[in-house]
Length: 538
Image (cartoon, rainbow, N blue to C red; front, side, top):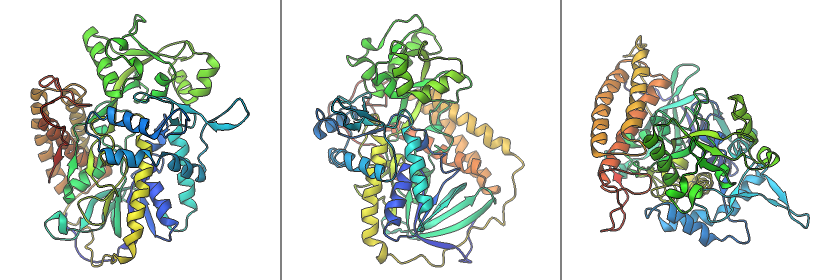
């Protein structure tokens, strides 16, 4: 499939790939300055991870809390690999980021003080030493997503495209990334089954993470690592892909489709117990249920494997019923659908792939290795999370780096020439597939062996086995991609197998256990040298 030149494409100032909290925040910040922005959503606008985020956004509001404490907690969770300057930059923008969201119409949960003043209600989550999680009950992401979508739909300078999946980024021809410039993207319109050529002065990746590379994930179907794979194929470096975060508490039920049980449940006193009702977290960490996610996930994984049980349980039923209904209405309704009344019964839970801490390497203004190509949100590796993301720092990162990218883009957008003579997509040499089973089979195989061999606990042998299978799948998928017209499922599979390879390569390079990367062959952290990021170069 080679492009040919017709040049009847549509040009934008900025093309944003992804419609979650990061992408829409950036679109609004740019459009307010008369910048013409296109926002692409692979599925519906609400299909991304932001919409499903339950917990909230970390920011310092409590008088007993401090910026320094938030920084210290983040650095501690990141196990030596956070960039301290990026952590400080992000944390100090917490309050103004929340204020901006409130201006966009997001209604956060409030409480009344003894004097009758209304203030933000703050939750506490794992890794945090204070209450600093601003939230909208237990559906924060939904409130943020819907408010931003509504604002974007009202804006004359923003065009929203649903069911548009990027096939490939378009760059200028120089071989070395330092000389390359982004000029647009080839985009599959899934409704029309047609590949469009969309050009722009600036392209921004806001595609989210890659947790669907695993068999079990809390993420929506859209989290297939598209932006990471697109950037890698275009020539960008990626970093720290071995640090895939597994959320400790995903609802264990055959029909639940990986429903997340918010960290806030543990923050409000929920206890992790074994089937016989006995607690176990105190044996793994003095912070018990409030330990960082990597510790809690490994503890649960250990107990499940050691005892041969299907799950453990998270019990909040000792709290008053009114308290539970007020704080966790979404979780209560969802569990009731499966016959679990969390006001009276513990919730069956297992760990599940949740967040990609690594990604496309960026600087403090979200710039990648390719000129005029940015990456914001979960797709990026900014240095904030290090070896393990602390709870509720993710939405904060989306907001802060949307702001940082907007500053840089607005400073230079008028000096960037609009792309010209960009070749269009040519699929005249390929045919429609009559073997869709190949896509579904390879998808299942990939996610199974990634879960078995590159999951919470790893070994050199498991990683070697996984890499052998990735190489075979890559060959099959490349051949299939070369002969048949693209579909959304095929594009996701092609991206997933690249992401799987990047995760495995990073994991093989790290000869120690640190943060989310735990290997039985190197169970301790290497204290003989300063911790280093794992950086892969195309």
